Amino acid sequence: MIPGSRWLSESRFQLSRPAVRVILLLSIVLSASAVMLGYSEVGAQHATIERLNALDAEARADAWEGREDWGDIAYNGFHYTFDRPSSLAFAAMGQRDILPWQHRVRMLALEGQIHERDPANPELAHLGQFDFALVVCVLLPLLVIVLMSDIKAAERSAGRDALLIATAGSSHLWRDRALVLALLLGLSLLLPFWVGAVLSDTSFTLTALTTLLVVLYLSFWTWLVLRFALSRATAQVTVLRLVGLWFVFAIAVPLLGRMAILGGMPLPEPGEILMLQREEVNAAWDKPKPVTMDAFVDTHPQWREQSGVTRPFEWKWYYAFQQVGDQQAATLAGQYRAGIVARERMTWWLSLISPPLLLHKALTCLARTDLLASMAYEDSVRDFHRAMRHFYYPLLFNDTPFDKGRLQRHPTFEEAESSCVI
Image 1 (cartoon, rainbow, N blue to C red):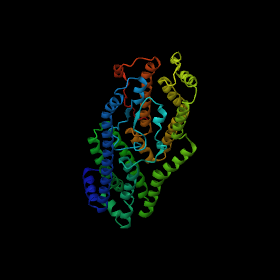
Image 2: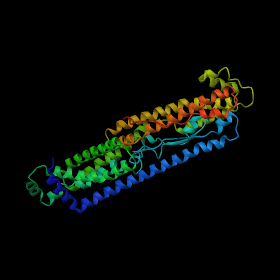
Image 3: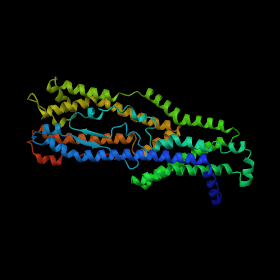
Image 4: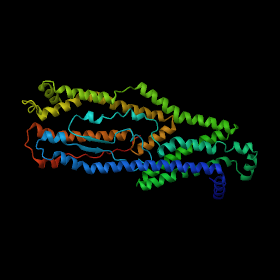
């Protein structure tokens, strides 16, 4: 433990050095910029959700105006679904710029609506956009290296190391100096984050957990840099070795691991799922109606007695072949989902040998901006679509007379709930 007087004197000494002041100022600027960009992006997403959610019911009421047919009502009833960013999302945006966080869905085949946007395997996207998580995971190690790599070599080359140790009266001078520098750097990076957490109304628990992860990560790099800096090597050699390690941990391992996982675990493309579902739906217009209805009642046997189609067009037949299109694409969609879950699991194993990747995945997990959070949102959309089908099928298959009052019982979308599970 550093005595209070030595802590104060060492802090004053380090802050008097122009190089240290520049690095700490750079740290504050990087952290504050990342927090501001994240806070702005989250604010824009919240504003978009609030605006579209407020217009949703109004737009649907306008679309339903004058319509008195359940099939027509279902066809024109778009419903806005969304995944609201968490209070910590400003610090770790994760994949929210790649993975869909809003959809407008209706009673048509769902796979086409879910996979209309190709996520391009975002579960393995490397470290994401510029945000607080990127600053900490990728840039913090470089700042530690610049601050501490010559902590002893510079004094040794100037011939002052023995005198400093004798004056300090302790052999732990370099460790104490590294601790002071680490604390100053940590405060420079965390102060903007704490301000952003307060402005975003982030819970104390999430703020404390994020702070703890940053402190542990900073401690790891401080220990690693100090181990190299206390060797007999020159400052230049020490820097080269440490930058090499940073490159391996932060760039090479995640990038090569991602390539290996992508190559070793091929998946169907979302576009294939979309095309298969659409081809099945389009082909249904030319198929005999009993073929479509038989395929539908195989998964919905409760409507077997009401599945007869006697007219050229009936809404129950139309929505039946929409559902059959989803059924035909279900196997491919299941393979895709299982595959990205397996890839996600592999990236967690990969992160065990890449501290920057491990920290980034932990932060996006806490912020609910990772793949699992996106899958929870997708599940909520699927649940809502299923509830809509359960609402409309009895009305369509039983030829229920139109009653506008029944729309008061129409299902409503419920936001996804998910927690961080590492």
